[in-house]
Length: 198
Image (tube, rainbow, N blue to C red; front, side, top):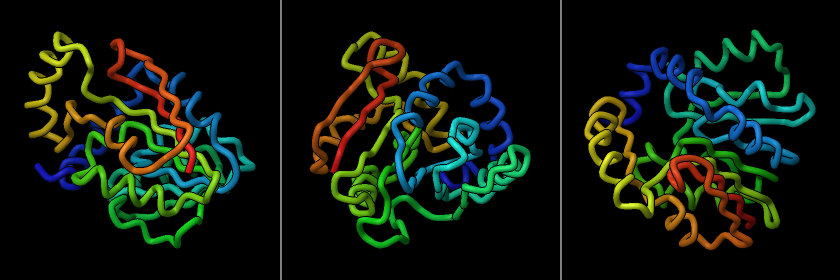
């Protein structure tokens, strides 16, 4: 299934599952590294909204209208005035070069059809010296773990168009970012926090 269609179809179910996942503390940590004008790519149903300080200006983009509708309801419930949502594809970000001080991506690059293009776009819109923060799950260096990811991958690919076997860290390193810091968080190295600078 195409990722956009999958997330539109399963938006409410995905939001429910995401709220049950035990990674909130890692998302909070990722958000804590953001400064200045922020772009959150793949904001989805807005799982990170509750972690943002109210003084930070945030633009959140996603290619799924149904997911953005859920995020809008959370913005209203939390009474957030500093968040703007836009329907947009990460592979074609409609903002000028050097527009943002920080970019955040949490569990997004498992789904982007062309992850290198999406990362190139993040690099382009990030200001020189700005930071990009990635909280992403990906293929492990452990073949035993990858066996189970491979089995689950049949399900996630067909329902959401999401891959559990992406090598996101390797792709990030190809883009040209500097000062790359990696922290392994869950399932040894499946979930990683990666912080880079332009």
